[in-house]
Image 1 (tube, rainbow over the protein chains, first blue to last red):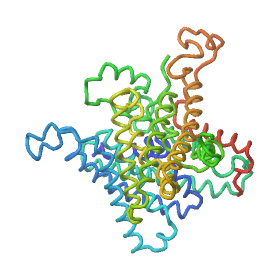
Image 2: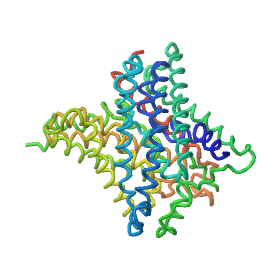
Image 3: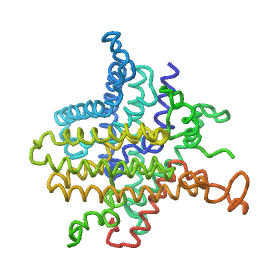
Length: 248
Length: 215
């Protein structure tokens, strides 16, 4: 139970899809001019993530990962189909998005019209595929946790786009230098928000101890990789949140 | 006769500055921010996208007359996914450490908006040679931004370029470090990538006032 709560808060605040790993930035920047469309898109992203991440987890568990096909028979236990992950994940995502589009068109034509082209564009939103790929890279152990991860990643993305839409509506009357207007100031504000979200890093540990996610820096990690080249299994989790200051 | 006509040459040159995919068209932002902490990763990512977009544009352009309109997104996704799988396997085979640094973001080339955007906007309606040039041009424009951001982030963040220390040795305090200079470790973290790109946009739009957005 505790691991569910931990994953939930970790995915929303610490590994926030927008501020920590920059997934879904294109639609984040494009749709955030008004709060109402931002809310609609955010809700759609939450729904699609909550559905596709568990589905892709099932695919990964029983079809794609090393030794996954053992349920078919012992002679299949050596197969490693993980190179097909990209195609299969994107196929499930495209199908689910099509379903979401049909459902939204039936139950809320107003939302469907206001979202316009961006609903089918969710299929190629990096956040959705990124959610599934991170689920695979972090080797989430159970279906319940996969659903939790999908849902909370979506909520984190929704929070981010809601915040930036609200801020962009307000700064429309501010004195932004002309070259920075629109895109430039949005980037800088998002950067400042990302700095703010970094302060959540101490949330799960109480702040005094070493953080719960002690991944080494990418530079240090590559040296370790040279020693581990023959080992297929990854012990450490690859996370871009982990790029920390190099200790002198 | 010149190698490329003026129109064709513009296909490559425009996306490098005036119609840059990242700063003007606002596409392909995700990977531009996440992997640029090291210059090497930026260069490899830029080359991967040049490969995928160039070849993908050619394939889609060859098939443009036989793809039914209703399933064209799916066809595009399949083409991109196949090319990205090739890139991923090649990286895993020949540059394993780098593929671990790039990790998930190689797969995310599939959803890189630049690729789908250029397929839709160009390859579906133009011939093979022009599509190839357009693909190379846009991917090069994307690559330039990646390399600039990666250059500054790695230089200011860890004092190295491509892994080679250029400002001196931080531990032995030689070079610039003997004056008390310290690496700005914050540059290696995600928020600074956003701010560096924001500053790049500022510089670009100051120099070319036609690009400034009206409120």
